[in-house]
Image (tube, rainbow, N blue to C red; front, side):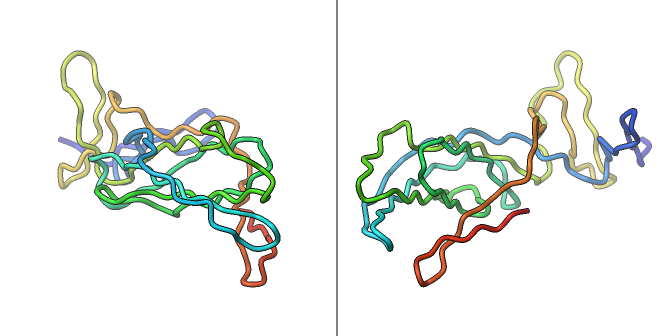
Length: 166
C-alpha cells in the first residue's frame, strides 16, 4: 500500500490529502428541550435550546447552524462531543413571542477519523499509515456552498451587543 495521496483542483487548491481528515457529516441536531424565557438585559429575554448530538463523531467536532431571519440574536456552543448536549441561546425583544420556526437547524460535523460506512459497490477510501480512514466517498463531507464571512454575536457584562467577525 502506498501513502502520500494528494488531490488538487484545477486552481491548485488542495482538496484531499491522506494526512488530514476531511470533515464529515455526523448528523442533524434534534431539539430535546427548551428552557426559558429568562429576562435579560435591555428589555430582552432569552431561551436555551438543547440538541441531542449524534452517537458517532468522537470528540473533535464542530456544528453549522441556520439562523432564521427574525431579528433574534443567536449564540451557540463552539463545538460538541458525543454523549453531551449542544446548546443554542436565543435572545429576543421582550415583546416578541417565538415559535418553533425560530429554532435554528443544527448540522454536526466531525474531524475524527471516519468510521467507514460500506465497502460494497464503488467506494474511494483514503487511509493514513496508521490505517485510520481520512476520507470515505460513501460519507457526506463538509462542503460549504456560498461560504461567506461569519458573525457571532456575544454580550458584554453591560448588556450591549457586539460582534466578532471571522
